[in-house]
Length: 419
Image 1 (cartoon, rainbow, N blue to C red):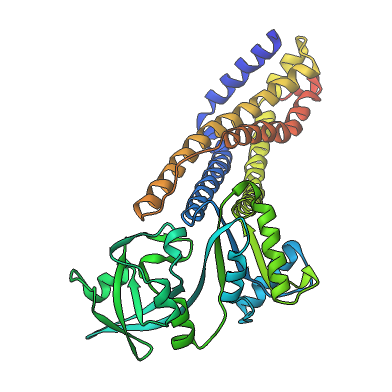
Image 2: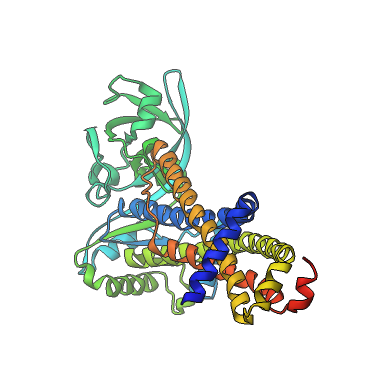
């Protein structure tokens, strides 16, 4: 123990004697460790942001969406389906009849379907490109959206193909400013639609900015604008979430029967519970974090090589000192320990400074995100500090071993001749 304390004192004295060099040596470690903290903090912030946005759709729901049949299952199927749909492949087999079948299941309270389209909305001399969200009346019972004034369209209006719409708060401001739009008509797809309500501001969720949507009865959008019969997704409210997985299996069975599918690998739909969505999100975020840490490790290796080079120079400069210590009885382990401790101290100091700057940068990122209206929580997981300090110590040892061994193996007589 006395030997370790003495080695630490010698290491600190040596580092203080070359403060400028010590500071430059730690720079690479500081940058690497600060990046580790930022990666973990940003990962936690993004995860909480996405989870919060998912929860805005409700926590007691099951979502059914179209999927391109690939003949495969699992992640490979999801990946190939996503690529195919990005290339323009359309699946037209999911319909409102499927929603009616799902609603008959005992654990389903009610459902709404959805389909998206883009069009130009006009009022007097105002023209704006808008997103249309076709859905049915039960949307307001399940989703977290709220009416600001006016009303949402009814089930009867949907079934009768009524030409009524509800405006998102953003598109209302663009077309009407501060004036009341209720009862007024806008033009969509060469037809006039009566405004019956305006939604409360909600903001963006993922890539969807609900404030810029125009809500329209789904059958009206299908028949009078798009000329289609299918939907993109169905969201179902579950009565008892404890049996959500079993209910999801029931939905799959119903849809396979409706779509005449006997092989699950050929499903043209995907059914997901909230638990599955969140587990998928956690898996993706963990994979991204590991990838970023692997990239960060490269910068830490560069910083570690810099430490090794500097320690090698230090050993050369202190050759006479090493010879003198060995001449008066210092053993191989004593010299080895002294230079290893010196290397570890440099990296740990760099790690502590890096943690400080990492916290600072993480806070600035959180502040900037919140200033743009994102619900970004500033948090740094405990494992971030463990990984940061662990990296510092490990790299200090790994890159300090070679210079320390070189010092410890010196012949005292040859070393003293350098004085």
